[in-house]
Image (cartoon, rainbow, N blue to C red; front, side, top):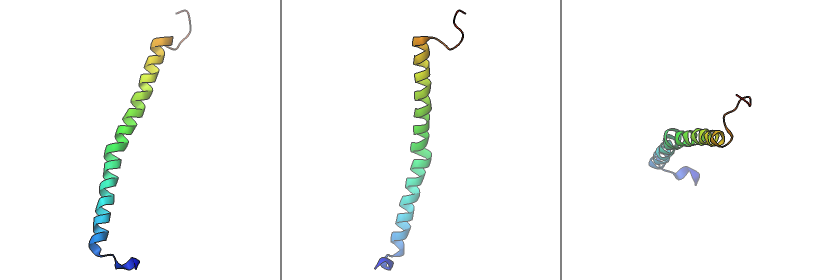
Amino acid sequence: MSGDHPVSDKRSRRRAELIAFFVLAFGIWPLVAVAIVGGYGFLVWMFQIIYGPPGPLGH
């Protein structure tokens, strides 16, 4: 029964998978990467506002 799929079903599934790949690869993952790096930078910035920049004390 698994060999009864028409060719159009395979093409539509392949197209849907390609669209999902491109949305993930060029849409969602770059946004996630920017959010992670930006969030880390924000945390470092807030930490330095509260505790001061790193370095030896007394300068």
